[in-house]
Image 1 (cartoon, one colour):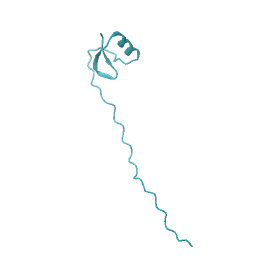
Image 2 (image 1 turned 45 degrees about the vertical axis):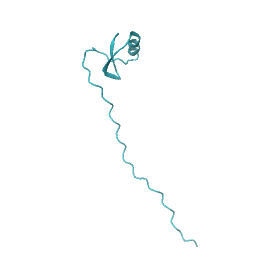
Image 3 (image 1 turned 60 degrees about the vertical axis):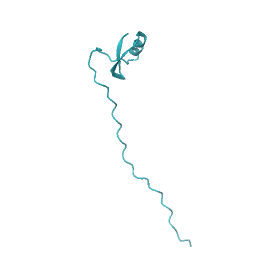
Image 4 (image 1 turned 90 degrees about the vertical axis):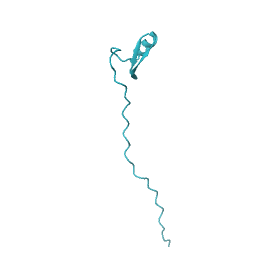
Length: 69
Protein backbone atom coordinates (compact mmCIF):
# COMPACT_ATOMS: atom_id res chain seq x y z
CA UNK A 1 0.00 0.00 0.00
CA UNK A 2 1.51 3.34 -1.00
CA UNK A 3 1.89 6.11 1.56
CA UNK A 4 0.93 9.50 0.12
CA UNK A 5 0.51 13.14 1.03
CA UNK A 6 -2.35 15.08 -0.47
CA UNK A 7 -2.54 18.71 -1.48
CA UNK A 8 -5.37 19.34 0.99
CA UNK A 9 -3.47 17.79 3.96
CA UNK A 10 0.25 17.86 3.07
CA UNK A 11 1.24 17.55 6.74
CA UNK A 12 -0.35 14.08 7.07
CA UNK A 13 0.56 10.82 5.40
CA UNK A 14 -2.15 8.38 4.30
CA UNK A 15 -1.93 4.75 3.29
CA UNK A 16 -4.05 4.12 0.21
CA UNK A 17 -4.62 1.13 -2.01
CA UNK A 18 -3.52 1.14 -5.64
CA UNK A 19 -6.93 2.23 -6.98
CA UNK A 20 -7.13 5.20 -4.58
CA UNK A 21 -3.55 6.15 -5.45
CA UNK A 22 -4.30 6.21 -9.18
CA UNK A 23 -7.50 8.18 -8.59
CA UNK A 24 -5.74 10.81 -6.43
CA UNK A 25 -2.91 11.03 -8.96
CA UNK A 26 -5.37 11.44 -11.85
CA UNK A 27 -7.07 14.32 -10.01
CA UNK A 28 -3.74 16.02 -9.26
CA UNK A 29 -4.26 15.78 -5.49
CA UNK A 30 -0.93 14.17 -4.56
CA UNK A 31 2.02 16.14 -3.22
CA UNK A 32 4.89 15.34 -5.55
CA UNK A 33 8.31 14.60 -4.16
CA UNK A 34 9.97 12.28 -1.71
CA UNK A 35 7.69 11.07 1.09
CA UNK A 36 10.61 11.48 3.52
CA UNK A 37 10.90 15.22 2.81
CA UNK A 38 9.96 17.59 5.58
CA UNK A 39 6.70 19.30 4.77
CA UNK A 40 5.75 22.31 6.86
CA UNK A 41 2.46 21.92 8.71
CA UNK A 42 -0.57 23.11 6.84
CA UNK A 43 -1.71 26.63 7.43
CA UNK A 44 -5.15 28.08 7.23
CA UNK A 45 -6.07 30.50 4.52
CA UNK A 46 -5.70 34.13 5.53
CA UNK A 47 -8.73 35.61 7.20
CA UNK A 48 -10.98 37.73 5.05
CA UNK A 49 -10.53 41.44 5.64
CA UNK A 50 -13.08 43.04 7.89
CA UNK A 51 -15.72 45.00 6.02
CA UNK A 52 -15.52 48.77 6.17
CA UNK A 53 -17.60 50.25 8.98
CA UNK A 54 -21.04 51.30 7.82
CA UNK A 55 -22.73 54.45 9.05
CA UNK A 56 -25.42 53.89 11.62
CA UNK A 57 -28.86 53.50 10.15
CA UNK A 58 -30.79 56.72 10.30
CA UNK A 59 -34.46 56.50 11.20
CA UNK A 60 -36.71 58.14 8.63
CA UNK A 61 -37.73 61.63 9.61
CA UNK A 62 -41.29 62.17 10.65
CA UNK A 63 -43.14 64.54 8.39
CA UNK A 64 -43.17 68.02 9.79
CA UNK A 65 -46.40 69.63 10.84
CA UNK A 66 -47.77 72.07 8.35
CA UNK A 67 -50.32 74.73 8.87
CA UNK A 68 -53.32 74.17 6.74
CA UNK A 69 -55.07 77.26 5.48
